[in-house]
Image 1 (cartoon, rainbow, N blue to C red):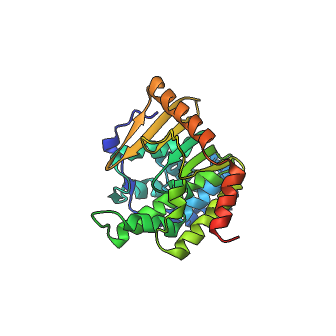
Image 2 (cartoon, rainbow, N blue to C red):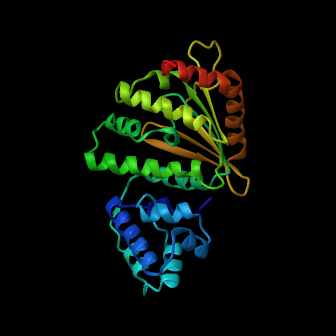
Image 3 (cartoon, rainbow, N blue to C red):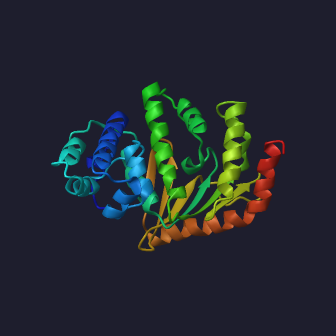
Length: 276
């Protein structure tokens, strides 16, 4: 886990991210390289280059330096990156979790009030942010939706993490954003549940025993096989590194999986919601 102080970290303004991404694409084409060829040169996934150029992912300083040297840009990308305007898209306490999520080997995620961000459609995410109190501005909502969609790239990366979701049935019964948004979101859940490495289970209402009454949480397995947990409540979240505390949540999650519908039963419930 990074020791960098959260107070020094900020997400960049979405418009500036797109501008820098456009520069990367312009310099790449001027050098006569495809996205795949450039990705091979700097040892990253082709999707990473595509995401940067489309403004869906912020260019990192080390990659900017590599590209400046490779594309002979006279340091233009690094200078542009250093002078990008900043905006807080995420609370400071969420920054480190997002970095851990991006590099995770495995995620075990329980939620009982709203769909996990990795599963949300843009329309559903927008409906979630429209429910914020105090209300967000339209620009703030669009920036947060874009950032949430960027996080979802981990599901479709070349070597995706293994992800298990247990979600409350109440979540899929709610119609946030209206019937059309709900139908699109349930269809997306069906699609994602078919992906390799993704397991989706629904905890039905009416159970007489429930291991998740204390609220949502996520257990993360890091690249070096450490386990870290994350819990979130009103206006704050908390990373948990203590092995004993993480163990408690791992045992809770194992119990939740045994209490929830299995994946085929979950898919059947989703199909019924769609009227199929």
